[in-house]
Image 1 (cartoon, rainbow over the protein chains, first blue to last red):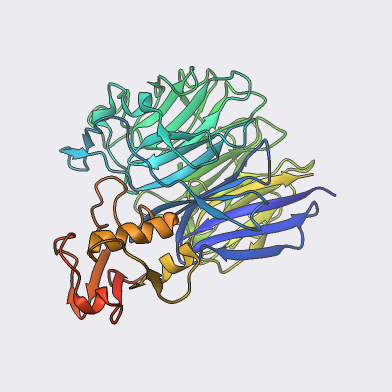
Image 2 (spheres, each protein chain N blue to C red):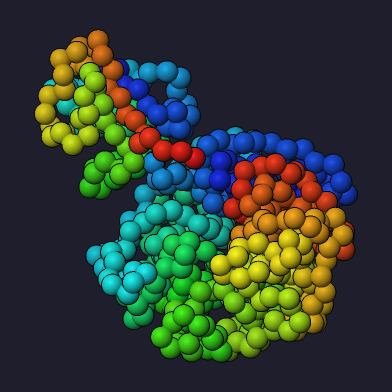
Length: 371
Length: 98
């Protein structure tokens, strides 16, 4: 019987949650790498037993862990992330030049067809690639070296490259998103990049419609329709129907359009999920009610999903990499909170239940659908 | 033989219990001890000092014989008691909550 494996990164370790296709009873494994921040774990689409994990701490820096057996065992691989050439500077919070300094890996995106090839999005924003299973890392400098690179500036969480999307149809096309520089697209497998932020409008930057400088929180794509992208920006939920060439707002009737994650139903490309958060200064759900919002119309019209979620006294946040969907016949939706809960809905969001309630703050959630 | 004490997180990363014991070629200095440590436990590379510059990470300190050696010359001889294995060389995570 098909099953799922949920990979959870937290402030104090990694956890692996496993269930069969019913997604009712769960086996919990962990903490792995106890005491370390695990920003992200992700499995290879080409070999689900191959996993990559970003392990870091302020004391000891970056470690990369790799599993070849679905998370049963791990071994540290390469952790040397050196920017190509002379790194130069970007803008600091106050607008002054600041040297580019590697801090951590925020996101791993394994290749669609080679388990040994994996991309890493890092802070300070840069894109690295390994073609030897994580043993060595080489920067793809065309992104950070874009003409606008020296003007990029960090968001409150640091200047992180947090989203990497590989187009499964137009091979060689990739998307990356950086807080607070914006969205970028490559059509040549990451060699050269250009900003794709037309239509974004952001307060707090000198030119609200600027080519770069937008705090994009997350981008999502349905693999069957790669020209359509959904974006949760700092404020505003956005959509592009032309692979990022232009964006239009689809916040519609959301109670607030601030938030972090966004994801797409595995079988319905027009069904989208967000978790509205009160504001940029109040990182918790409006009215203390944890509600996922679902649009079945590709945006603009949203419905609150509340069954099984706390509807009073709830003041958690859901981070940008902490939502995922499985691809079972009835799509499962998952998200984790800063309060340590990981919720699952086995019916596309209609009803929710906690898998675990008391983990450390959840930084990331990914799910693998297993045969 | 040099005795090295690692912080708990790095003991787990290196899969060691208790102290690490190292044979150091040539003079016992902080640099030669750290080189020997990283040779024996390559997964520790980058977690104590920078891969390239070899600069100590900001939240890591080096102590021995009740002295803070963090800012001492890396090529200076370690105290005789450390070189003889009577006292350990301590790699310490800066005191902080979390």
